[in-house]
Amino acid sequence: MRTEHVLQVGDSRESDVADESVDLVVTSPPYPMIEMWDEQFAALSPAVGRALGEGRGDDAFDAMHELLDAVWGEVDRVLRPSGIACVNVGDATRSLDGEFQCFPNHARVTQAFRERGFSPLPTVLWRKPTNRLTKFMGSGMLPTNAYVTLEHEHVLVFRKGPRRQFPPHDESRYESAFFWEERNRWFSDLWELHGASQAREGDGRDRSGSFPLDLPLRLVRMYSTYGDRVYDPFAGTGTTTLAAMLAGRDSVGTELEPDLLSAFDDRLDGLPERARQRLDARLDRHRAFVRERDEPLEYDAVHYDFPVVTKQERHVRFYDVTDVEAADGEGARQYSVSYEPR
Image (tube, rainbow, N blue to C red; front, top):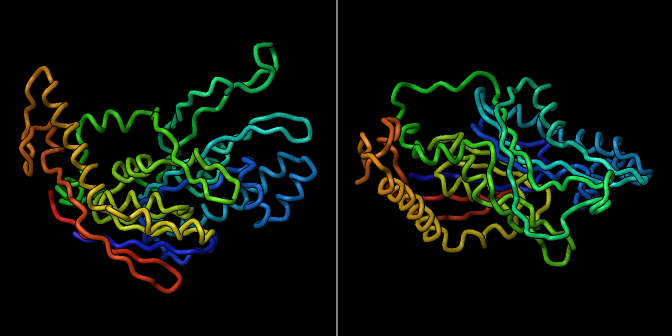
């Protein structure tokens, strides 16, 4: 098995990705009204800078989301009918002109997708554990001007059109199955995962809350099959691309800032071994689950020496990464990943 991946520098409001050529979108955009992203939003829209400078928070919020709306229009264009879009976004708290408020980014993104005809599906609250003792906001221990601290973000899920249909006993779908116990954990509406750092030397920005590899990897396995193509219009440091490589899916990513993508090749060092370790851990967790069951399981996996809970899991098949080849394309980096069945 081989997968193909493209990472390109560009503005995802005007993507050159072909119409209806991707099966799944997994992305995390810059969050409106988070100060770390003010400069980037203002560079794309002078209205943002004016509103922030004059303390008009609601106008700045609207202007930032108008920029994102253009990307969601492109997502609509490139996503196949019945495709899924997953958007990780957090709400923002901020004081402007002496007024403190919460800006509901998740609600505004949901509105944008609904206006484009997408069906909102049940969402996930991603809780990012913190041990900070001074995490409260506002007046401390005194009512009434203390505020709840936001320790979660949203993973919004949308479908474009009706449910996806597969041929009976479709091989790629059944090989892409997840274990019963994984399904119970992954399809919960509360995930606890630690954020990953995207801090860049010299730029003064702390991106410690950006989504960790396990988040897009889980979404790719939940909402796509082997042979599908995944798109990230805010590729950042290529986390969704890396997830697609590990999951055996094709991918394409677009990123506005070239220096973010420039470090992606370093993330591929030792990828076959790291991928093998991740797969070993996944199989070990399932074998431990089998050992701890009080009653024997009814079905045997076709390709492995362990039983499974349901008939749908019998043909599950995993692939080890064996090689990654990189090549320079016109305005993009291209990668081919080879696999062999475990």
